[in-house]
Image (tube, rainbow, N blue to C red; front, side):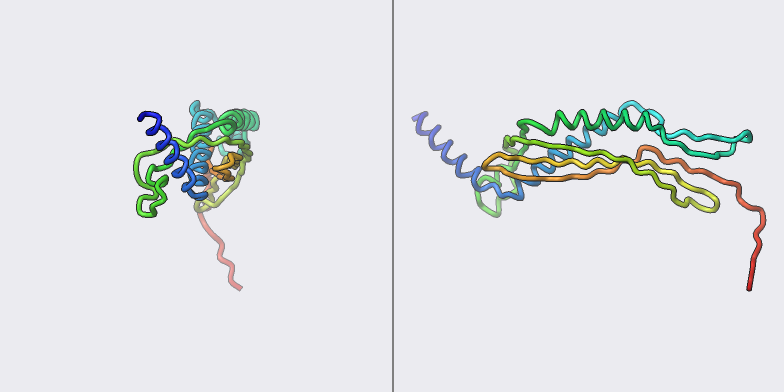
Length: 188
C-alpha cells in the first residue's frame, strides 16, 4: 500500500512538474537573482562610509567634489564577491502548488513548493556620476551604483535565462552657490 502511494505520488509530481510553464520558471529565477543582488548590496552598504569628499576654499565655499575611488572599488569587490558565491550552484526557488496542476484557474495559487535549479550566474557593477540642476545657482552631484546580473539554469526540465538590473544612489550632494543680488537684463 505504501509503495503504491509512493509510486502514485511520484507519478503525479512528475506530471505536475511538466506543467510548470517556462514563464513561471523564468519569473522564479528572476526573483531569486534579484533577491541575491538586493541582499549583496544591502550587506555591502550596512556600514555607512563616505563615497565623496567636498573640497572647500579658504572661505568655506565648495570648489570641487571628488569621488572616493578606493571606497567605490572596495564596495564593487564586496558586492561582486558576494554575488559570485550566491548566483552559482544549486538553488531552490518556490512555485505555487496550483501551478503544478495544469489547471489555469489554479495557476499561481496555493502554498509554495520548492523547485531546485542548477544556476550559473554572473554580475557586473558600474558607477555613474552626474551633476543636475537643483535650483537657482545650485547643483546636485549624484553617484549611482548600477548592478547587472545574469542567471542561467541549464537543468533539462527547467532551462531558463534571466537578467536583472538595479540602481542604488550612493551619494547625493547639493552644492549651493552664491545667489546674485541683481541681474542685468539685455534686450535687443
